[in-house]
Length: 121
Length: 111
Image (cartoon, rainbow over all chains, first blue to last red; front, side):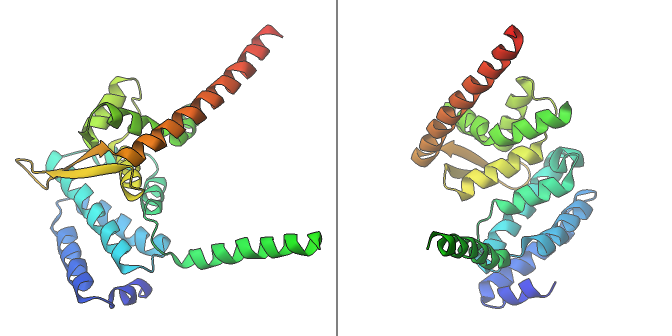
């Protein structure tokens, strides 16, 4: 859980934005606050983003979504649907910043390329 | 049935949203409402929002923030040149798929 906080230590501006985000999260009325916090938690686990700028962009969009929903009194299920996991993952995947898994993806692609070259030789 | 519909829609929703934005700029809720009127009654706002975030991140739309009487500003999305190119590609892929699938369907009926 602490890994991505460290990512944000790079920039004071990002830290300030993150504090602001947390405050906005707290200020949401229920049930939006609980829902937003639950998705926030999932983003931290699943997201694996290692790029502070991308993380800030994602979180800003996230909080705006809930602030808008709270203002419009949009039913909770209208936002997260029947499958909140699918919603959260689709949302996170839109941000193509560096993820810890990217290194492993590149490694897998290279391993298969190398293996293919072995047989062609 | 509902599940299969959801899966099929997932792959095409980006193209559908781009084609709506090609007609005129809109914000998230307008797009959801429009699609519901057209029969996608199970579609939720959050799903459309996720598509909008995705196409914004990929640079297919321009975004304008329009202040609203209440709450945060609304983001109005409009298709840009990259988005139009993406939409053309979508229609090409769609025509091919629809054609092939219709052929399969016809083949079944006549046998």
